[in-house]
Length: 49
Image 1 (cartoon, helix red, strand yellow):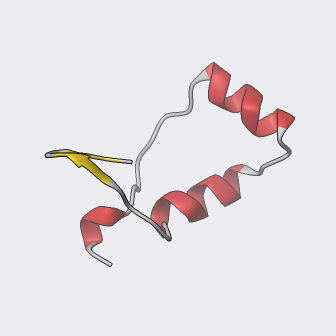
Image 2 (cartoon, one colour):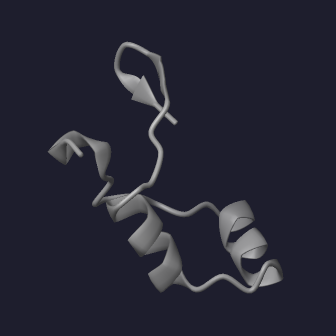
């Protein structure tokens, strides 16, 4: 995996925090997924999902 595939800095919106709580996901799980994703999809130059 390339270094640029991971996300180390992010900001959660109020909606995201609501969904995290509703789905009973911990912020530690969010950190883990964003820092070591299993799949990266390149949408267009400069943007990945």
